[in-house]
Image (cartoon, rainbow, N blue to C red):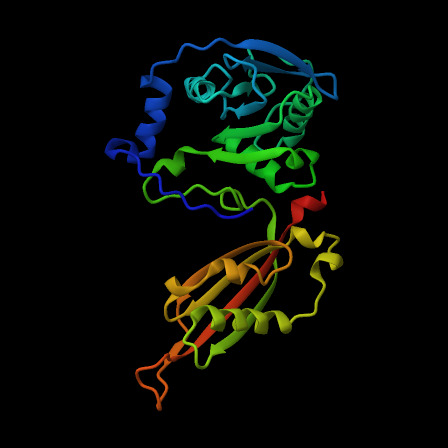
Length: 305
């Protein structure tokens, strides 16, 4: 998944994450919302309750909402999100985790931030209705952790039907923090397996992107190790972090650099570095650019479980 930088700027008082949490739980007025409960039987014969809210007109898109620790589908933040999505013409399936819907479950299992099998069961249940063409998942706090882990396990068939993955967490409300749909929140069992270094030049063009491309290619040519096959992963499972050092990183074309990688989940960032050497015969012309690249390859070892 790509790393998405948020440009959201909260109003002054809401830059404090503690106040934002308190306001949501204690001060915000609960919206009026009609919810219809559906009980879904799980593969282990336990149950999970979904609280449905429906748009005024039949619609082909649904948002699945996941609450936080010790929450439920009646919490203000869930109902407020549901209300906003209803106004935007979405059906809402607010999931209550095991033991959170006001009735004890029948099995000695509880929810936690990694219990993706229950979420998979609910998603499959909704897909079996064969009614919706677009699905959105929204997770709050612990629900965000659960959703991020689920999104990383792309082997699940749901991802072929998923349109968006939204992860919301109180810590993302601060001005200096960002929301990631990629690998930012929980690292799971992310393990670095390989690092390669490369150098590239743009002798005459003065192009930082060309120098960076050659640095990446230089690093890739150093390595012929088939890591994915060696550890039993598909090539698409590689998590690839790339850092490029050039004198002017703002001049880099990151899309062109990302196109050099045929597979894997690639994240590229620029840093100030490398060299910019004026050409002695053309002092006013483009300088020679030297770029340095570091490529780090990771795997999420939890995928092997």
